[in-house]
Image (cartoon, rainbow, N blue to C red; front, side):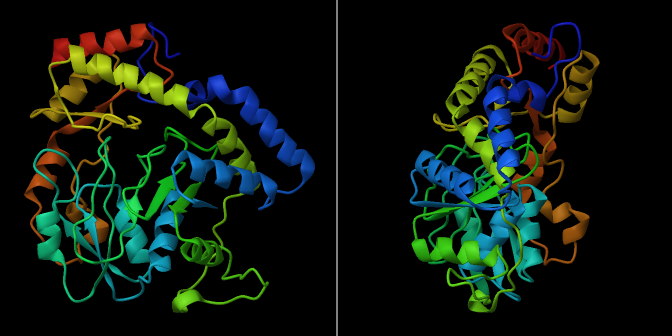
Length: 353
């Protein structure tokens, strides 16, 4: 627990891992003793459990959430010169994965009331070179893709435990996620066997089940496999996922009931990866809460179009995204918080807002 005397931490992965730590440590020790560090039955068991937990037929473990996006996009045929629609509110890697493939991210505005891709603006942004759409499940809301007849790759980095809306979704196991690795990791979830095999091949130098090496669809393969140590850790933590999500929902429900701030809308079944609110004087509120010992996080201080690395992209107006990024902040919401910690957050917000 974070304790009542020091600051209320926004996130503490040591607290997050404590309840399942013994099982995860034992699982990792077994892998280390066995000497099979890449692939093998440990990875296969985790992938099977992960697929079952998300209601899909197949899961492929990879080295990071960014790798998952890149491999999924490659698997649906995205390559150099193609355009991919991405929302203007998301972590940089959503667009960065597109750029890493030599493709062009086209930034789409979000809805007025929540940071999900606006289907009308997506339709306006689509053109003859548009090859795919990447809707992002953000802050507890599942995104739906615009009806454009294009392949869809869902960015589900904040949607662990939830079934994909469509046929293909990626996950991130960055340590601060609800299901976090003891390092980094990611996964591609899908129903189609051929897509899963292509993802696995692309992530292992283009290796086929027969042992030859190819370049599926002309895409350059890479080496970005999830190692067995991380798979063992994640499998152990996956068994504890319900408890962690339940605690986050309890905290979020108390915030909803007792805070006067405007919460970012979320679905009933959200894992509450992030509890986000909006405030017209966001920066002042962040400072006031910090002075009271409450750590907060501004995940996206600017829309993607304002990032220096994307200044060469064609400019598109994203007024809803700009406003959201100027107003949103996230409050502590994780299993390491005691009821007293949550009370301190509420009291501080009531005093500062």
